Amino acid sequence: MTALSQAQVKWLITGVILGLLAVGVLLAAPPPARASTTWNVGDVFAGVAGGAYNVYDNSGTFKETISSGLGGFTTGCAFNPTLTHLYTTQFSAGQITKFDNASPHSSASIASTRPVPESIAFRADGSYLVGGPFGGGIDEYDATDTLVTSYAVLATGPTGGARLD
Image (cartoon, rainbow, N blue to C red; front, side, top):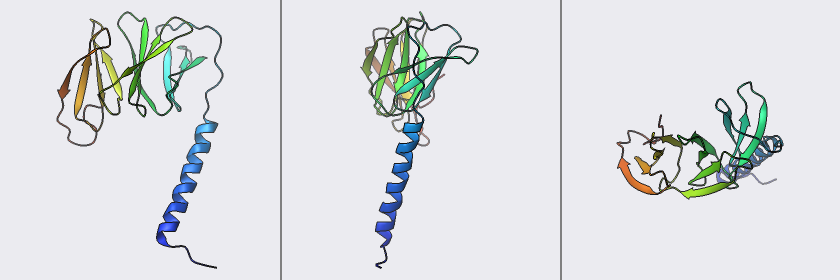
């Protein structure tokens, strides 16, 4: 029997870990969605795997799952001031997804200049800010989803402008 080299052992361990992660993603599939739902103030949107969010009412009852179709990690989300659209950050896909509040919650992707958009916060006029790690910046969009400007943020580590409140 031939001994494995250190490089072969590393590749073998990496393969096992990736296999376990893939099984975990499959087992974490969201529950099936209910037909036609309305989002209400107090609903909770939980980012789950695969570019999806599970939606619960304020008592914790599952309402539905929404998905960008982009896959990957979902991170931040926020409603615009008029509560007509939910904006979600698609961390892995480098996109922002805009969902209609009205069922069936159609969506549109908005290109982000952040390589990994993580958080989003709205201003009263409908404009919004998007931040993410690894870039040391925050992007400002107007209410029509057009990039207005980018602000440099002094990054003291890998987080940059990741958290917006």
